Amino acid sequence: MTNYFTYPLDTTGLLRKKRAIRRDLSNRKNLDVKRVAILGGSTTAEIKDMLELFLLHADIRPVFYESEYNRYFEDVMFPESGLKDFRPEIIYIHTTSLNIRRFPALNESSEVIDGLLAGEMNRFADLWERIEQDYGCPVIQNNFELPHYRILGNLDAYDIHGRARFIGLLNLRFSEEARKRKNLYLNDINYLAAWFGLERWHDRLFWYSYKYAMNFEAIPLLADSIASIIRAIYGKAKKCLVLDLDNTLWGGVIGDDGLKGIRIGKETPEAEAYTEFQRYVKELKERGVLLAVCSKNDETNAREGFTHPDTILSLDDFAAFTANWNPKHENIRGIAGSLNIGIDSLVFADDNPVEREIVRTQASEITVPELGSDVAKFIDILDKTGLFETVSLSADDLQRNLFYAGNAEREKQKEQYASYDEFLRSLEMVAEIAPFSPIYLDRITQLTNKTNQFNLTTRRYTLAEMQAIAADLSHITLYGRLRDRFGDNGIVSVMAGVIRGAELHIDLWLMSCRVLKRGMESAMLDSLVERAKMRGLSGIVGYYLPTEKNGMVKELFSEMGFSRLPETPDIGTAWHLDISESYNLKNACITVTP
Image (cartoon, rainbow, N blue to C red; front, side, top):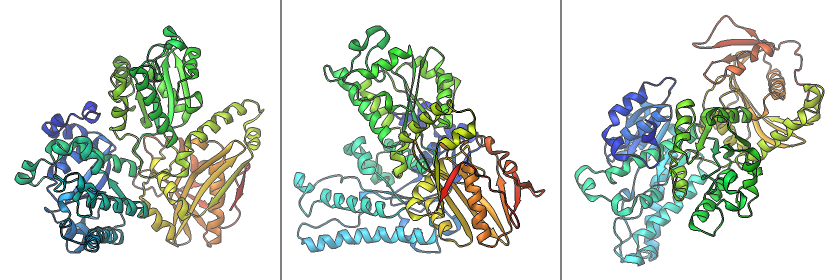
């Protein structure tokens, strides 16, 4: 089943066996239900079927609304459409270059052409604006692929009347809007069509016969791309790439061939391919993906490989390094534990088919791409899966590896102190705890959707929902940023509660795994109590909704002095803290600043 969803996609198998695949995937438990509206400028039935498969594979059970043929504009702009009753959580607008109303005529002036461009932009901007007003949900919008033909030949790319130039300008305007509009995400079919092949993409028979705007075999690729964006919006992208070494990061076997014998650099085509792959991996790390090593090797030999004069990666690039002769699936579980991230957040890359299969069968939560043994294809195989898809780049993303490097230093220091409390005080921790700030809302939303272990309710929120909560005076919100003498951990904790009568009900309380057991939860609760008292409240009600991953916080409310309420939510438990009189501060090791 997994092989249907790894690169290269078996598009024929997906299209032919979609019912059987859907049946198998639908039987899995704990799927998140999401309402997805597909508004199409061309036929979308097969797109919907394929998107369902990719979302089910990502543990999302979609419920669909599908517009009638080419009614995407009317569905959004006219309130009598069924879209309002559907209450979408995601809207995907499937338009292509076939939906551009008019291209420049050869006798038109630059002023007229500028007006055409503005007209197309305004039409889509009106759609996005109305969706923001009426639904406040994320919008996934296609940009435009290059045209089927160029009436001006190569001149089409730069003459003011050229279709290719016109599409390029539209795509540029779309990208500018996506940077400004926090709920707008572009599905880059301009890249997808070029990679698939424009000649194949523009299958006119399918257009004339069925009004599909692309080749039938491109539909699974399109659906995979959309699903990758949806996964990223809901925090289901992967966090860590675990790498084998021999014949994966360099050619040859370091233990047998020695440092001089491994193949990396630019001396041969094979060595250059390994160099490029290392550079790709390094770029993943620089944009926030954690890197780890899991190798069957003598550790001294394994580490020596990164002293090669042509290596791109260094030991400092890895958040975890394991080289021994134990089974790899056991070592990878240990890596997840050492990084305090879920094992389902890991991707394992290994050239050895036997090792790949062992990890797949013994630790099915780990994603194992079919990497093969041809290093020239490694980048495509990892890149085209969309496993590390991101919808934003925050400062915390760019510094994530520094955060984990700091954690490693903290662990080393811990052994030098007689007690854990003494160690915590030695960290000289300073927390910035304050209400949600617009500048941090991207990171707050990202953390909300990615955090599973220290997460009392595991409720997920879109950026628009977070913006609404931050602006609503009936809510009390807090983010927590933690610094210490080893560095800045970034924003690591989020709390949000709604005021009902004289009590605050905590809808959201979570903390990043990288600061567990440092007392940040106590500092956050102290600040929440202080702000609740400032609002004249007498009590706080908290909820614990158990999942497969958040068992570590099962007793948190009890440990924090809450009393269990007899009334229990549909699942989980409810807890009450009386703050009408005295409240004993719980934070003893962190200095809190506004």
